[in-house]
Image (cartoon, rainbow, N blue to C red; front, side, top):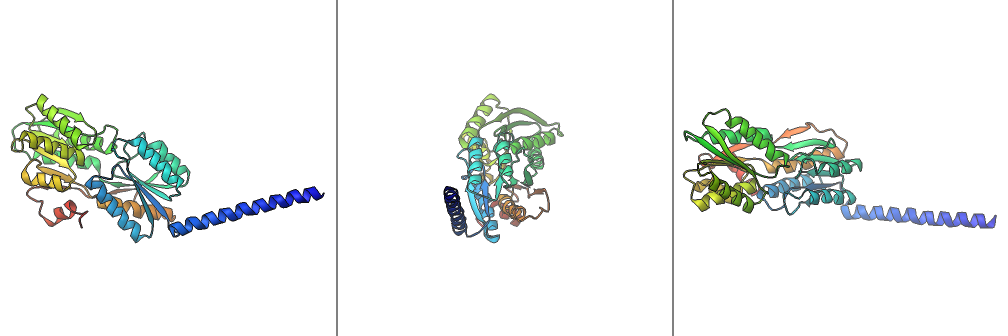
Length: 327
């Protein structure tokens, strides 16, 4: 009997130690985070002006809603595996929500599903992922963005539009949807002929090399459409190098200091400008609502788009979109 009570006492002793240790660890976590809810923004890039502006919007919302924000992004916009590891890492860190932009519509889905199974709320921005765990999508209507690019191309007055397309990763949902909208729009004009279409890694260097090679194969090309910030810069640099600004109509996407300069000097004729600040801000704002048990007002939120040309680039509305990060 004595041994029985002794063993019971030892068990209770160690049980109390475990409880106290767990309580101490919980208090330590609360001290570190200040008791705030935590949201992770897992982006496609940390370097582009687009993603810097997304991050600025997310930071503003996290401050307003008193949340801790973690920002993660791979070195390459094609590295879906790194994104998956980042998702798993922030889940282990105990985030309450993830605001996510998928490199790969399919390959990122499993990691997102796993995060949701751990109770993490998921908001998607900019580029969608094939997961039913996403409770809200915030971003550009990518098909409409492609249609706008097509409309900007059709502004070219040339009797024949020999079009080259420079797109990025085939597995990125937004790029492919933009191209679909573009193709459907230009198909309505009998002048338009799509001569060549390429997909490159989402870097300035590969876009430039791909554009130069495409122009070498097809010297008749007098129109080029491209669909994100890095490919836009690559196309612009290729046009500069070949001194083709006067004879090639270029419609590009997104904006930074360089691409706005290309708009001024004629290497680019139109920019389809999105609203990345709103994507970041609304992403975190909706994550806050979901964490706190509130339903989102809309499952899909369409942020603004605008065609900016040399003629309207100094208008107030254009300036607000072109330089939202600076403001």
